Structures are given as C-alpha cells and as structure tokens.
Amino acid sequence: MIDIRNLTKFYGRGNQAVRALNEVTLQIEEGMFGLLGPNGAGKTTLMRILAGIIQPSRGQVTINGLDLLQEKDKQRLKAQLGYLPQELGLYPDLSAREFIDYMAILKGMHAESQRRKRISEVLELVGLQENADRKLKGFSGGMKRRVGIAQAIVNDPRIMIVDEPTAGLDPEERIRFRNLLVKMAAERVILLSTHIVEDIGLTSQKMAVLSQGSICFVGSPTELIHKADGHVWELTTTSTEKPDGGLTIVSMLHQSDGIRYRLVGESKPADRSAVAVKPGLEDGYIWLMHQ
Amino acid sequence: MASSKIPLRYAMKTYRKEQFWMPPAFLAFFCILSAFFLEDGRANSMATAFLGYMLPLISGILASSPILSDPALELHFAAPISAWQLLVARYGVLLAVMLATGFVFQGCMALMGVDLAYLGNFWQRQLVWLVPSLTMLGLGCFTALALRQATGGSVFSGGLWIFQLTLKGYLLSKTLARNLVLFMGATFPMGGTMLVKNQISLTLIGVLLVFLSAFLLKRQERYI
Image 1 (cartoon, rainbow over the protein chains, first blue to last red):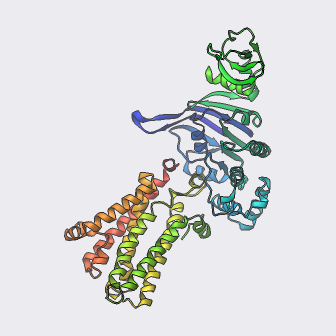
Image 2 (cartoon, rainbow over the protein chains, first blue to last red):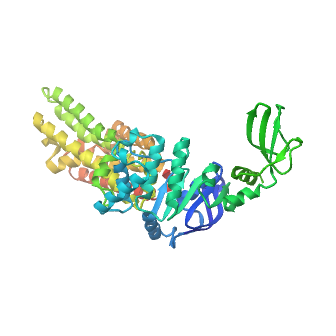
Image 3 (cartoon, one colour):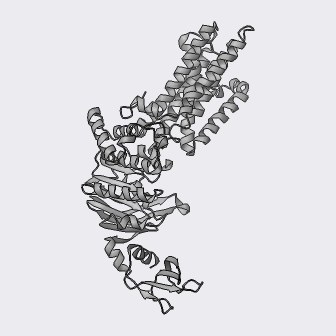
C-alpha cells in the first residue's frame, strides 16, 4: 500500500520557486490506480518521488511500511519497485534480453539461473520472446514500451509505477498495453499516470485527478462520471458559429445535417435543440477541470 | 573496474562507442607522426606530446559524458545503486581505456625504437601522463555534473587545457601556480621535488573533484 501525506514539492528557490505538488494526500491500495491530469499537473513529479528519484520538499510517503524519506528504506524500496518512466531511454546496441538482464542485476537479482528463468517469463508475458535477442535499435515504439514494462516487472515488484505508458503508441499497441497492465494489476499495486482519459476508464477501479499540483478528485471512474450529471448536452446546428455561454466543447462532428456538438457546462445551451445526455468519463473530467 | 552491482560486461556494453574509438584514433595518429619524425629525432617530442598533453586532454573531454549521456539514467536512479557505484562503473571503463591507450602507445614507441628513458624510469614515465589524466578526468566529470551538461564539461576541460598550454611558461615560473600545471611532468620529467609537489597537488585535486562529483550525483533530480 502507498500512503502519501501532505506531499509538497518545490523546484527552485526563493522568488523563482515553482510549486509542482501542493499538499498531496492519497492512499493507494492493491489493484490499478489511475492518476489523471493535464500536462504539467505534477504527475511525473509525483511518480518520480514515489520511485525514489527526487526528494519531496515536505510531507511523508510510506510504501508497504517503508519510509521513502529514510535512505535505508529508500534503497530497500527501490529493489522492490517496478518503474517505467515517461521517457524511456534504452541502449540501442543491447538486445531486449540483455537490457532486461542488466536491469535485473541493478535491482539486485544476482543469482544467474533464477534471473535467466525470470527474464524468459517476462519476455513471454510482454510478447517479445521471438525478438528477445534482437538489438533494441531495430524495435518499434510499442516494442520498446514492452521492453520497458518487462524491465519494470523483472524483479516481480509488489508496486509498479508507470508514467504515461501509452503516449505515442498506435491504437492496437495501446490496447495490448492496457490489457497487459490490467493482467498484472491482479496481484500488485499499479499506479498509472496518464493524461489520456480513456486509459483510466478502461483499466482502473480507483483514480485521482491532479491539477496544478493539487488533488482535486479521488474516487472511482463512475463517481467522476456522475459529477457531470446534468451538465452534458448535445446539439446539432447548421450555424457556423460555435456555441458559447461558458460551455466547453468536448467534441464536434461534421454530419450531413450540420455539426453535432457535445458540450459540458454549468447551464443548458441557449439553442433549443440541445438535449441533455448521459456523461462519460471524459465529460466528468472536463467538468471537474472547469469547476 | 565495475562495481559489484554493475558487472564489467554491462559496464562495457552500455558505454558509448565513440569513447572507445577516440583514444585509439589519436594513438594511431601520433604513432604515424612519430614514425614520420623518426629520422630527424623528433619522435621523442611526438611521444611526449601524446603522453603528457594529448592523453590528459582526451581524458577531460571524455569524462564529461559517461553519466549525462546515459540514455537509461532515470532507470539507474530508480535502481538500488549508489552514486559511487554508478561513478565507479562508468569511470572505471574510461580509466581502463586510458590505461590501455597509454600502455599500447608506449609499446608502439618501443617497437619503433623510440627511447622514452628521458621521461624517467618506468614508474616516473607513467606518472607523467597518468597524474594529469586523472586530474582532467575529475575535472571533466565534475564540471559536466556541476553544469548539468556534457558539452559544458568538455568545453571547460578543453578551455582549461588550452589556457594552461598558452600560459605554461608563466605558470611554471610562479611558485604556487606551478603546482597546478598539468604539463609539468612532460616539461620537467626530472623535476625532483618540484615535480613531486606538482603531482601530489594534481592527484589531490583529481580525487577531490571525484568526491565532489559523487556528492553532486546524489542529487539525482538535477539530472533528469
């Protein structure tokens, strides 16, 4: 379990200091936990703090009873953690098997026979067994991400931190990747950070929304959807003028009879043809962000 | 050569290729130059130039990139390895490359019949290039980490080298400054106490810079 209390992080000092996280408090239990937020919300900062890479300015983090601010605990924790960074750097001249082997050694897996067996298992799990001995420089973006997941799970971590794992992947790879994460979440804590709403809706039972460094929602995706109840409308118009009145356009679709808008806002649009519709997760998120 | 956590084979495999090729490339160039000057007796000057001047420069330039140019640096930071283990693994390989280059060059000189005895006995001869190379290694590493930029580290190291080369005569004439001159061993290989003082100072500076580098590297968030 991950217990985060009043976590604050500043970058820089004095007048130049930027507050990246502001009194973040979260409890994350077993299963998949989604962390949603716009770019620059502080998601990566939070992920890096949890991975033991950067130090918080204030606050407390305990992971499975280990205090992340204590150096000894931090080193023990790193050995038990799986981390997939947003920008995954690989060595182009290593093969997938070698790269995962190297990462396994860094995580303290020194018994060679045990390591070899585990590497074969994770390569199979991510569907890379046939390309295991190919050099990474020939891999596609999706395959590289799968290598990233394989290195993150090679030490069979109880806790996994994955930062924007589907960014830049094609639709098929994204589906494959999401399914892989859900499969693994059955027996561990997975903290998934993303700005792609769909990724959270299709994978996580619990989620939080981070905006400008602060947590503005914690709950289930269904609860977030309900937040937008009575605030989502659709209207079809031939007018070239966009609907206004403080409404946010979630989507617009050109059809034979005009443009169909999906709108989120406080009050119904002035156009009489607007009808209230059931909100989706994206609507809930937009509503929350504009409150 | 590598820490217990980073085996030598991976320390080598994850090392940037150009770092392996640059020293041998200069070695080959200076061997060819020495061969050209064998007849008129200037091969000794070429050998001194390579050992006492070029090797420290190469050391400083190469030392600025092993950490900051590592594509998987964030994954290393997320692993249970210390700043020292990472430094030892990365700079151990560089040191090995420099040692191999220095010894292979002396071997080539011996094969070509160039007598390096004017640089002292075997151990004194090694100190002529090893001490300034270590100092420049520490300098390249520290400045790159301090500036958070590999290029900055190379430029600073190269700049200091050019500065010392240009003002060598002046610096050597000053009692305190001469202890910091990188080329003292190559200029006065039999410099006695003056050379010993210089080599001790340079070694201490190199060691201090490596310690400071480890201190900087502990602050991981500066580098991601």
